[in-house]
Amino acid sequence: MSKSVVRNKVVVITDAVSGLGKECSRVFHMGGARLILCGKSWEKLEALYDALNSVADPSVETFTPKLVLLDLSDINGIPEVTREILECYGCVDVLISNASMKVKAPVQTLSLEMDKKIMDTNYFGPITLTKGLLPSMTSRRTGHLVLVNSIQGKLAMPFRTAYAASKHAAQAFFDCLRAEVEEYGISVSTISPTFIRSYHLQPEQANWEKNIWKYSKKLSHGVHPVEVADEILRTVSRKKKEVLMANPVPRAALYIRSFFPGLFFAVVAAGVKDVTLVEEEKQ
Image 1 (cartoon, helix red, strand yellow):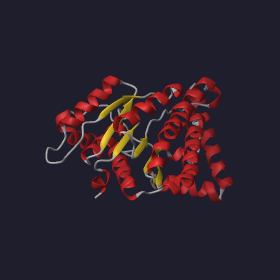
Image 2 (cartoon, rainbow, N blue to C red; image 1 turned 180 degrees about the vertical axis):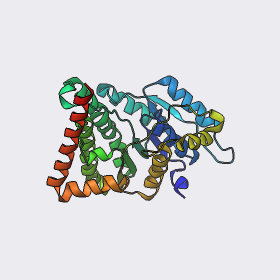
Image 3 (cartoon, rainbow, N blue to C red; image 1 turned 135 degrees about the vertical axis):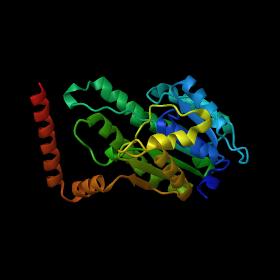
């Protein structure tokens, strides 16, 4: 049912060459979507293109993906890329904003340049692309904007100042946007995993799914890209507004942060002190 909903739909996926991007590409391609795959590396985009074509089911009508070079940290280049995306099919039905840059370090060790780069990739890049595609959606009075965010957009943790700030900003933008575009029939969804695992081995083209499930069994923490991709498909199908992919511990932390902030900050501060002591003992 979920796949039938995206059949013939024009779906844009940013950072399609990442672990999650590949899985989203596979799921939506098999569902019969007209894919526009975006990424910074043309070589990796072509490899993904070949992999998708090699696993296509002959009994199901699929469309050859279109490839577009896109670096979300290059804000000035996004308007031109936006025009290129719209020229592919004349419209966009679903935009999956997937690209993300992570960093973990004490605040005093991060340069302002790094802070800006993370904000460009995680916030200004996605919203610039969203704003560029939005007029086409409003004129057609249809569309779906999906932000793959992070629990860090709701729950900030130490040593992730720039990353958490960018994710909070993106969350706030899409929350505001949801209310503004509802009258145009446009859906806005945010999907927030705790963190997404990555696999480092490239699956064989002829045996894609089998290899992915094989390696997923060896990973014990985080959410696997396959799970997130399937959830994104369900979210688009059911037009869910918000999805939190987290186990009970981070869910409880969100609850404590909201209703018992004093307790939450005390526990977090104690954890930072423990880390500092461990580092000092190592020196």
